[in-house]
Amino acid sequence: MDFTQIYNQYKDKVYRICLGYTNNNEEAKDILQDTFITVWQHLDSFRNEANIGTWIYRIATNKCLRSLENIKRRSKLNNSVLPDEDFQREDNQNNKIQILRKIISTLPELDRIIIGLTMEDIKQEDIAQIVGLTHSNVRVKTHRIKQKILNKFNEYGRI
Amino acid sequence: MEEFDKIKATWKNQHSKSSANDININHIIKKYAQKERNRKLKGLFIVFMLLAVLVYLLVFADFQLWTTYVGLSIFVLVTIYLIYTKLNKGHKVSSIELMDNNEFLSSLKNDETCVGSTKQQTGLFIFYAIGFGFYIYETASKDSTTLIIGYGALVVYLLAANFFYFPLMAKRNQRKKEEIINQISTLQNQFEENN
Image (cartoon, rainbow over all chains, first blue to last red):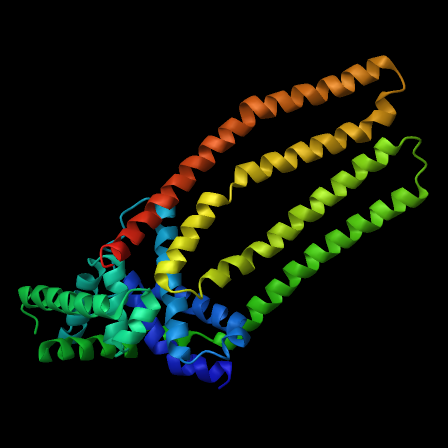
């Protein structure tokens, strides 16, 4: 598989994972670009590994962790809730997405990564490899985050 | 968790309005590769020019004392080292991003803790000062007044740097570093809670 194919296959998923983490379109776009620059740089060193998806998500989530650290350094603000200025449409579907993004943005950083990966149907074993936790930890954590999101979502009465 | 599947579907639908499709990755990669190539070429060009000047001076310049040659060599070598570390920095950063999140944060924290930019700056400054000290000896030693003024100025400069500039820089860098390390530790705590 060449680089363009890899990009086309994974860009949407990586973008949404970054968006879940940052709650900001422009920043998610920047992280997506940075991620694929690193993928391109290290593609030769990857060849022997089993799952390219896990490898790409690992880079993307590390970029997310790093970018938050940079934002904090720049703005010295707690970045748990970032306003989404791009969002203006008020229809129901968009409202749901807006609420969901805000709910996710209030979660701790690790939870945001785990739920972002879960939303993309990535297996828990792979998530464990990406974040560096045990499978059982990821399983428990995922269950708790899902519950938390559902409760908050129901509070808004949007389901 | 049927409800969660609905949420998941909602989440995935948002992409149709996203800006990920606007990105022309091949253009971005091309631009990035060119920028990196130019950066490396610029570094190599400076190193080459420095070495050429050094070789030229060592072969053709008519210095009387070996101290002048030593001074010049120190200048050039320290500058080459400085360029090398700058060129190498980007690659090291991108390599740690291949690790899992937990290891990545540990490496990031370790890098922030170990790499003391102030220490490196101080070291380079001292080497430059030593190089300068050697270099001016040939000129300064011709009469005692020049010698005293030359080395006196060097000593004053070193003292000022050592007691005012470096402590100030160290304090500022330490504050920045602590802030970053605290942020990394906060992130790391989230991983430790789960282990």
